Image 1 (cartoon, rainbow, N blue to C red):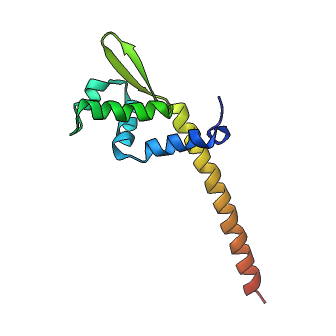
Image 2 (cartoon, one colour):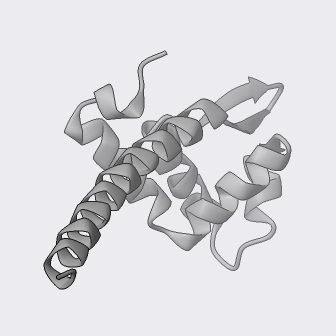
Length: 114
């Protein structure tokens, strides 16, 4: 599978834009714990069924969830692989910043010592 850092900027933007919303993060949390129908998801939010469907569609477009037809219901299943890849990308950025901080620390320590 392709690492998130190897995806297009647009694909990465879709993932982080989708996760920027609290309701979508909650849907992710819930669907990572168990598969739920859109109806089950909608029952726990103070918004219309259509609004929950739109949140799920944003997550689906970012490949964070999949909707699986099961009879008349649409079951929402999280894609933990995309979450893992997002974590890898954030880990990559963390390593870059830690490296910069370490270099700055070394430079400051070098200038302080007699």
